[in-house]
Length: 485
Image 1 (cartoon, one colour):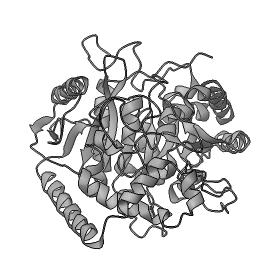
Image 2 (cartoon, helix red, strand yellow):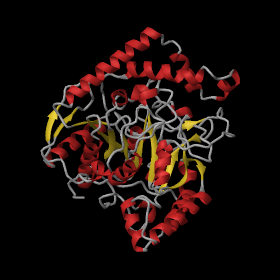
Image 3 (cartoon, helix red, strand yellow):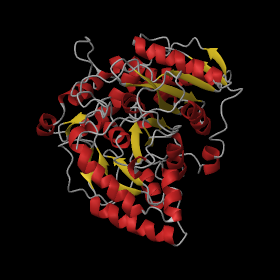
Image 4 (cartoon, one colour):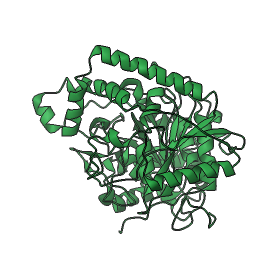
């Protein structure tokens, strides 16, 4: 990185931010080259990751479940395939984690809750997990989430508080906070996250990694979410190419999701990845008309806009007011009451009080209010569709602030009441189904990461990845230091 770049502080990384001497921090493509050449085996890579978890996870609490024996068995099978020159995919033998809201065959999916019965049965993979399994990814464990993924930070009655790798006193965000922390510290190369209102992009922003909420239906979703089509699953990684490889493996139709898109040709996601942004029409909004944002975030966002102009994009300011919170809270709140209605009084006492309060607010949503919200959602989608007739990509800050104290739903002393108070920029694109990513674009005065949100037209996931890759290549970002051993 050149000395003039404002995007990173500290040691100068390569274009992925990875230390080339540490297999835990190598991107998937580098691991595959080493596997193919016999310089590194999947077994060695997985053992290194398990050692890294042993060293780091007592500090950040990213894992709800570890699977060392199973992971090593899968790594040995991958090693044999690479030796025979017959890998299943470019991510065969690559260490990966699964968020503990997502079904994994043979292991409980407790969803951060003491309510969930660990007895199961747990005899089914979610579509994304099945696809990654078929691609040869090595699952080292399941990562922490808040209870039922209900909020934008990661703590739960079951697993406790998950912490930010850059500063353990702060939250990594959520609800995919364990996934983000695991990736940032090399406790897995790839992480499967979920996003019902920003739950991939919030922790990606707070921890300085890359995360993508794909177009709705790109990665099939099963079992159906309580909040319906607001929910997505997608990749989280230390670099854009890793996320693209992961998405390419998962983007295949599954009949269990009746809204799933047809199979995506991996070439649509990968072939143009390094095509750059020259001549691209990129709109930008510093606050979506519903700010304010912290001064450090505003500065980093302005610098990112200037960086895209230097890369040859045609930058266009966008006058866009997307106040999505009332609409989002109506639809998500009503959906969350589905599980609440089945709970006994004893189960309610075991649950996160914040989850119970949110679900009880949802009980107040009557049918006319819900139907009106659905019409408002359609109107918002039409506005965004119209916008993407004029631009190719939209830039916003991912978050208006950086990570705050762990164990709190809102920044202490802020006067805010709910996590949706500090999260205005991610929910709109759950409502509209557009692909939206977060990539690190700077750090605040305390050294905490700042995220840039990159949004594309519906189904333009490849263009979002290409845009993010252009920025990453020009402005790589460092990784957090490892906790003291």
